[in-house]
Length: 277
Image (cartoon, rainbow, N blue to C red; front, top):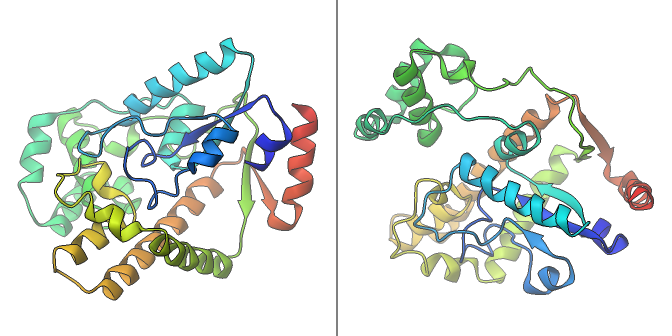
């Protein structure tokens, strides 16, 4: 937002896999109505929470938004976000094909850890890149591996392929202790802003496979359904978010194209970028 305030021709594109869902505002830290009124935002509030929204869907929505921005001679500023979606937009990452029947068979197996072991036998590299309780990713990896006869990890540009792109990619350096504190504070602020009430409003909806992965929502839904206390739900959500943040940091640290900026130098870098736009 600070760059957008400096450069009036900037429009923001949210590269976040969860901000596409309507009604999931507080928990996804979506831009407020006032912020959206000040600066035009794209790629938020695209579908309802019961709808599945894939990387391909996101790429199509991004292409449409970019076309609109370019036609109006505005400057696109991508913010976020979800590692896979960033690669999908920046590198044109093409996801592997889908095999619904295989996926359905895998979904019928309730033992997520056993599925992970099965993946480890078929694709050790792919299995090593995901936690053994990340059911959605494990099933997707097995679906692709079994359906194509190729390891899931062999698809796409891979984590070691970073072609030159017409983007300047910036990352903010932050100490782990500060990041952890910010995550804890964010949950406190979100609870005060009505996060629990927001989740209550979703309790009667069967969330899509993708929407149900949103950080904090699964844990608060478990509390609402009487499966855990509120304090336990929040602690689980915080722990899960910290683990996710570590994975995201590792993901982006592997990309040599990312310029890492210490927080203390962020203002000067923003001023530099603003002067070039």
